[in-house]
Amino acid sequence: MSAGEYDRYDRIRGVLAEADEPLTAREILVLVEERDESGEGLNSPHRVATVLGRRADRGEVEVIAGQPYRYRLET
Image (cartoon, rainbow, N blue to C red; front, top):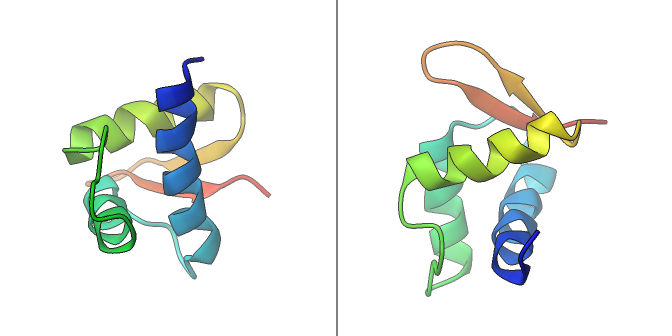
């Protein structure tokens, strides 16, 4: 895993850790942008979903199927 990918996930993980409920990729992107003005590496909900999908494969994130998908940290 590259340093850039780790940084992207770290910012997403921070948002999910503070969330009271599962969030969509778009909601996560908005919250990341509010925290981090650069938003570097996360310029679309699709990119957020890609990062989260990789982490879901490792068991770190739960993907809740629906329209749209929602995400939360595995506990």
